[in-house]
Image (cartoon, rainbow, N blue to C red):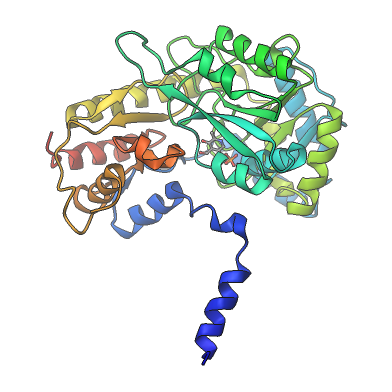
Length: 412
Ligand SMILES: Cc1ncc(COP(=O)(O)O)c(C=O)c1O
């Protein structure tokens, strides 16, 4: 006889979509919750714990005082669209039409999702470099894309940077390919794709007639003289590239949720429709403030990179001293590490998990008091990231110093 409970269980199973069943909650966001619960130093999620620039905050205050409180045009406030187009032309020498080729979204997260939903049909294949920013997995599932992963190998004696096999990449493209997702500077590896690598990818995009959807959110966080080259800048790519970017990282305002997609008119029309019915628009006063942030002088961007370079050195040293094998990033603000040399009670039932990196992350947050992100969350097959964890250094000196003190308890 069926009880009300058993009926409910049956109903609730059927009431969840097959798509939503296919992915878990974000591990990165979960680590932040665990950090708060255990009062740990949070080096997991990539949000700065220091203030945003005073001028940017003042512009937001001013926008609210000026009563910019109602819906902006769904594809974005004109002042911000104009500022983005002007800045992109200044930095990448490529001109977009602010009326027909840009959509302002709720963060680059929504811009990526809207772009994928706008161009992908069920079964279309999307090439993704691995390890990848964890959102791209659910993005692929929700848009119906079939991901084809191409592995990047960590730096080695032979190759000082994260690298991919060109034949393997070429083999991932085919008649069903619709797009490649590129993230440069890259999270989690810190890789900054070189012009030669981009040209190789460009040739594949042209040959197979696919889009390059390029996530450039860390464009200004660069080290060691590396240069950010947008795929849109390469010959033949202006009309097959969708550039995703946002305010979060460049202006230290991850909570403002302002991002955008630059794309030719046809995909932009589709992106705007998806965006409109998903969110209508990003916060109007913060878009207005964004317009003034994007007019920051070049010195602002130079100083940002210099400040992060110091933090990178600081955390590299802390992690090396604690016994991690570190992979030095060339851009963005994360350090991927290998934990093989570290000793920890992996079989303790409080931490035990199917994956060593998850057990280690639990141990680190509960016993040592530092939160990181398990490497498996950046791989399609979790086991492939089982010896890696990622730390971020977009934190105040006090935060990094607190982590350093806590790492003293870790056994190498
Ligand atoms: C590669 C990458 N893309 C996008 C985002 C999210 O950006 P936004 O805050 O604009 O949604 C992040 C945040 O960590 C990221 O690392």
